[in-house]
Image (cartoon, rainbow, N blue to C red; front, side):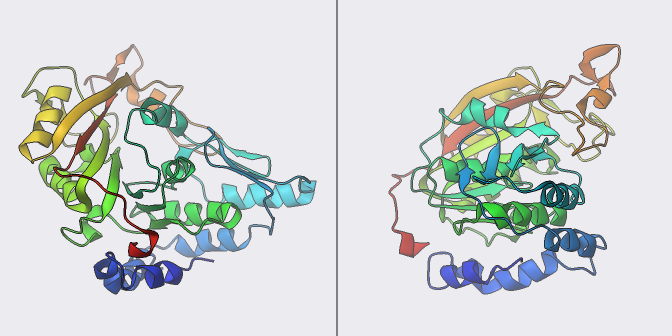
Length: 335
C-alpha cells in the first residue's frame, strides 16, 4: 500500500530531479523494519483497513474527511476503527473516515484558522511542510488549492497514518516522506511556500534550521513558521535547563522580536508576526486516540501560567517571511 514510485517517476527530469535521484534510498532507510521494530505492526494495521469507496471528500473543513452515501455496516465500521486505533497515538488532526471520528491530541484546525487567511494564497503552489506529522495541514493546504504538497516527517508511525488516510482520500499530488529537513538536498530552491510548524524549538541550532528552510524556497517564496516563544524584547531568549513542559529536546524559545530579527539576519524580507496564542488545554489534550499525558499534565497544577518546571507556559507565534525576488508560478510539468 505504500508506494512512492509514482512520485519518483514524476520528479525525474523536473526541477526536483536531484532529489528524485536519492529518494528511493532515503525512503528505504526511513521505513526500515530493522531500525523501527514496531513498523511491521503498523503496516499490518494498514493492511487490515477495510476496502471502502469515498463518495464525499472534504479537505477544507475542520475535520478532513472521507464519507459514503451509503454508510458502512457495523462490522466494517468496527474493523475500520480497530485498525485505525492500532496506529495510536494520533497527534495532529482531526479526521473523519466514514463516520469514525479520529479525535487527535491537537485541534490542528485551530492553528490553521489562525493563519489560513493571513498567508499568501496557496493556489497553484508547490508546498513543503516540514515536520508534518500524519499530514493534517498538508491536506488543508491541498484543500486551499496547492498544486503539490510534500510533507516530511522522520517518524514512521506518522507516515503510516498518512497512508491510512490516503487509502480513502486518494489524491496523487500529496505525499508524506519519512525524512527530516536534513535529508532535503541542499539549496534545492524549488518550493513556493515552506511551512515549519512546531519544529524550530527542537533544533539545537535555530539559525541553521532557518537557513535550511530558506534554501528550500524559490525566489519570492514564502516561509510560514510557527514556534514556541516567550514574552520579551529584542534579544530575549529562553534556553531551558533540563526539560520544558516535560519535553527533553527544547533548545531555544525566543521573543517574537528576536525571532523576526533572526529571519532578517539570514536575509529574509518582509518578516511579519501574524499571531501569538497561549496554548490551551482545549487545543492540546488527551483523547481516546492519544491516551498518553498531554498539556494538562505538563503545566504547574497550582498555576497554569507556568510549565511543570516553572517556565512560562507554552505560547506559540506564527510568523511569515519571504525570499528576495519576484515569485512566479511554474507549470505542472516542471514539478
